Image 1 (tube, rainbow, N blue to C red):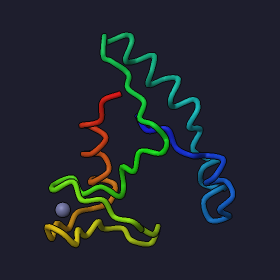
Image 2: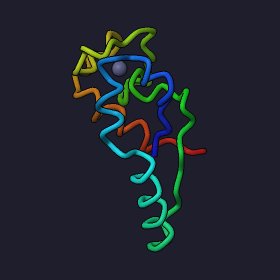
Image 3: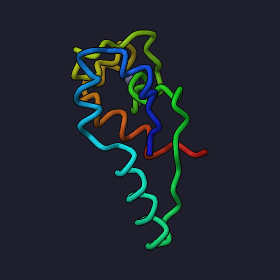
Length: 96
Ligand SMILES: [Zn+2]
């Protein structure tokens, strides 16, 4: 699981409404419960871990990635991948 900088995101008027609607705290509570139930380790990534900015193929880290960029395009190895999918691969390898 990735901890997001919710307070920071709430300052963005385009994001704040959709964040409020998502019930993230309840989601986290339920996910934690399910993990305990099934004996799965619950790992929470540091909120400053740049999951979206790291290339899941070569490890290159972008200095800037704007929200409008829906695809991650790596300028080092040429990988083109959906940004959320790229972030999820990075998070799957994250260890606390
Ligand atoms: Zn790359």
